[in-house]
Amino acid sequence: MATNEQIRIPPLIRSSEVEFGHLQPREDHKTSRSTLIIASYNIRYAVGQFLISSGLLRKAGFNPPSNRSKAVGEHIRIAARAFSDSLLLPAVDILALQEADKGTARAGGHHVAKELAAQLQMSWLHVPAGIPRGHKPKPRQWWLDFEEQIGLLDSGDTGVALMSRFPMEDVTRIDLPWDECPWRPRLSLGATIKVGSRSVRLFNSHIDPHSEAGGQIKQLEVVLDHAEKHPGPTILLGDFNTLSRHKCIETRRLMESRGYTTPFPTGTLTWRGAGIRLHADWIFVREVKVVRCGVARPLDVSDHWPIWAEIDLG
Image (cartoon, one colour):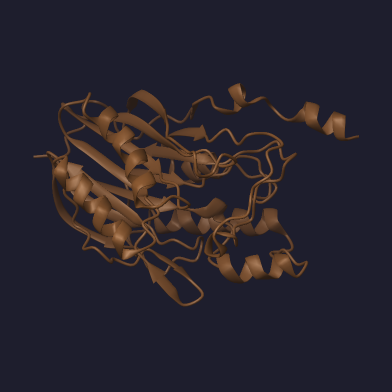
């Protein structure tokens, strides 16, 4: 029985492919726009906000919600409304997702990025992390031990995604150094967004929370080196997992030393769990101006809150 289950699991090389959505973007190269609304959201496979309490319940033998597929589907619909109805944040033009599962049991079999993009009527890209098959996770720091792991024989995967109302091209998968946590690859997704005559290069990254500040800086430097190959307006955003003030300060220092700025003060609260509030998510820009920004609260689809910024293309 175990042998048959292993055969059904796709090999890593297939899991690592970039997946392109088939929806046509709402706006094309001829669109004349001076500003864009961009957002970043660690959607945590749309399972809900209760990371720590759900982890404790699993240790006791319970794994809510009981109808996982229905709950995740409803959360995807809630997220779609939030990103389009202009109540918690302006209607988004570009959305970066992290922990966007595809076909996992913990996501109730949903393809989170594809389904959310369909409801938002956006074109989309998804890059699975390529979880090593049969590689059992090792003990971690206690505060990182609440997450529901993807099963050893689960044929699904997690990953990062980009959604856009504009054409996307020059798509790049960037595998990041992940020595600290070999069972959980980290990656970044690069793409160029065409808005009228302007091109904006974006990098959506999910940085490893297990590493000390130096390990996280090492991953960010890989993304920055890729960004240097593309002169012009550039945006780096995502879940940088800066789960301490020291990590926030070191991350900001690195980004500013490479010519990037952020409108978010160090210590902006973007993640919560069991009464704890931390600054995990960032948007950094180069050669564009941020007109306004914010954190979209309340939204209970994930333990993170979306962050957003209005970009003046100039």
